[in-house]
Image 1 (cartoon, rainbow, N blue to C red):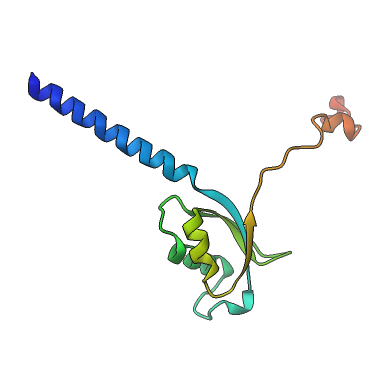
Image 2 (image 1 turned 180 degrees about the vertical axis):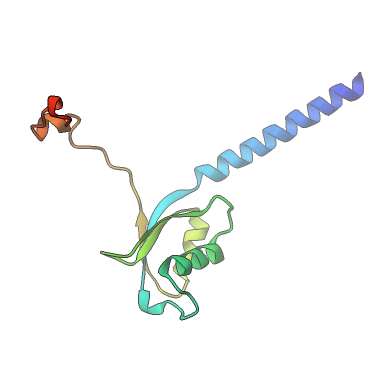
Length: 124
């Protein structure tokens, strides 16, 4: 019976330790928009997306870091979830131009159908 109690206590402590580590680690991750110089892309990559994934994986030390979106029209770059140390490593990557936090924005109106004078009877 004592063995079962010791095992339960050890498992409980293990889960608490892992949970607290993950909580702190995930709290440090932020979304960033990263502007890249497309002329610096090596010829070995067939697409920008592949280059961005390779660049991100070389700078990423955290398994939760990931590519969110690739920009290719107005600017060349990507958005990704990064830790501060990963962002510092990314700044030393070839082709890096700039980065800034991707801050959530609030809608300016909560009454869009009324604002746009849409008729709900006509399917709008």
